[in-house]
Length: 278
Image (cartoon, rainbow, N blue to C red; front, side, top):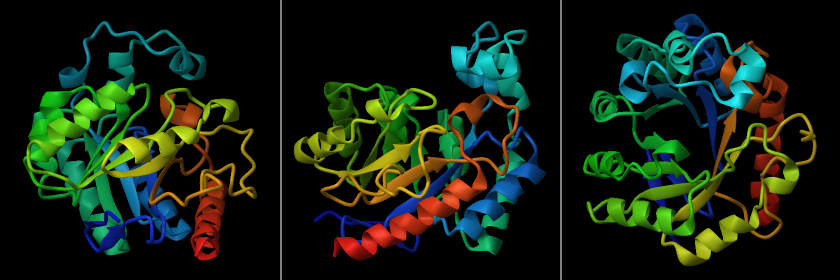
């Protein structure tokens, strides 16, 4: 049975579920709100809280248009570049966030979107978390893998061949500490498209741990743990990432976020699932 250690936490099928609160850019570019998201994640009992580290000009053109779900929430007047620029935190803000997470005794994570960000985060994070958009960004994955830290990677719309290519690229750098997260790039994700059986296929075909990113919308009832992704009816999953906000805010990422009460319920039911799994 594979086992990975991230800071003071062990990730394995036999360990308690490792829960990441995916804060993303739900801080609206404000450090004060980012700290409030840390507070919520800590109070809920999450193991880690994860943000995104990027410089807008390095990840998209000034002419990139918003996705349809983003337009529905924030309108189509501004470009995706203009929107993302407002959601940027300065590098010095992440240093402050790391200190704040240490004070609150919750693990700080942030997804890098460039080699520059990978280098910057090297002394701040115990593991690199990559979104599914970087699954096929082999140069970035190889660059991060050389740092020797555990890597957590969303799979999104990736095919099995693309997932294998990414995994092999990381392994070829001598890094075997990888967790893949099953998710669907649909915000919010209808229950009929969650397809948890894909996780079983990944576990059978790939030599790594497999977890889940929960992106369900309002149709999910938080008092039903099986709907929250705490179990796939056969095997408890070692890692769950859950997008959330401190409250409902008018920002682009809110199509796949939940309010505080939902993440408290997720923690509660994941604890129960670990106990009853045996």
